[in-house]
Length: 83
Image 1: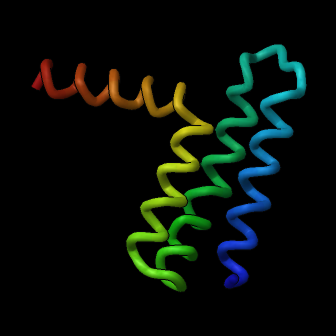
Image 2: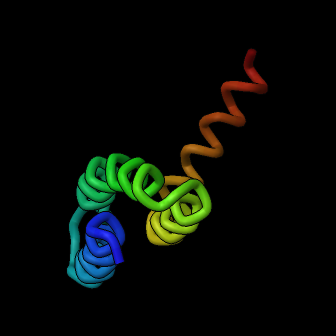
């Protein structure tokens, strides 16, 4: 297992632990932190292990961050309908 995959596994465990802790802002600050760490991590995994493994890690990250992805999809849809 490469170092990038070990880092991705640690990210997943960190995301699960952060999701279990109580929060006043509905976990948004933690989501921004996880996104900031996760995006370069997905690039690193893709670079070292190839696009299929990179897409699997991306899907795992998106499953943890499903609400930010849902809001992003809604925002993109609004931009397309306006334009």
